[in-house]
Image (cartoon, rainbow, N blue to C red; front, side, top):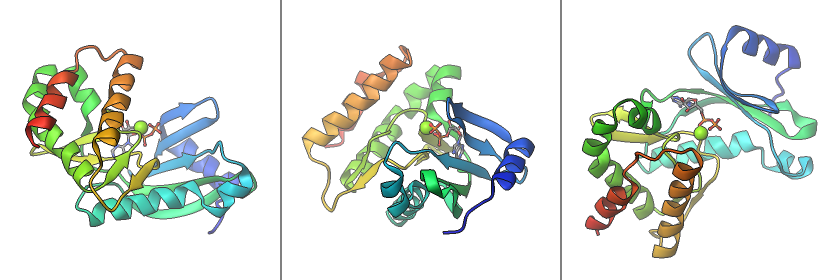
Length: 200
Ligand SMILES: Nc1ncnc2c1ncn2[C@@H]1O[C@H](COP(=O)(O)OP(=O)(O)O)[C@@H](O)[C@H]1O
Ligand SMILES: [Mg+2]
């Protein structure tokens, strides 16, 4: 995997717009050409991170999702940003859509209308054996026409059989914890789960 130099990274960040950052620096940058740069810092030991770079796992997950008919960003390039520390990155074309979280903030009444199709989308993930540990409202995009897609797809497991009840419950528990942590108190979580189970 090629390495991108520190200077190139600096100019991407300087010319782009930082969308997300944390204490370690920028995480998602919108580049001048409207593509996105995602930077993967890692808590893994650098030697382990070097064996399986996060950017490659991210790309592989987007491809597997697309094969299953689930919309995900299209990764155009993966590279090292700091191979010694295991920091990798990728460039992708964004999904044209809006995070469900922003819709919920701006137009909560629209969420009620979207709820059955959102439940059906989550059901499709589970039926396809997709366990997305970061399944939350910021990582599900509404693409228009009540279609949905996923971003931030690093933490994902693909099983060969539909998820069992235990993992389904755990997935919904994550979502509930996310809502509590982010104080998203208006989201109709119970109704979402009810719609989901009505599809059984
Ligand atoms: N593929 C994409 N399409 C559209 N917007 C995106 C995409 N990827 C990231 N974004 C925007 O960047 C934000 C954070 O991206 P994300 O990959 O979820 O990073 P983080 O690890 O910070 O959660 C999202 O909330 C969204 O607004
Ligand atoms: Mg995210």
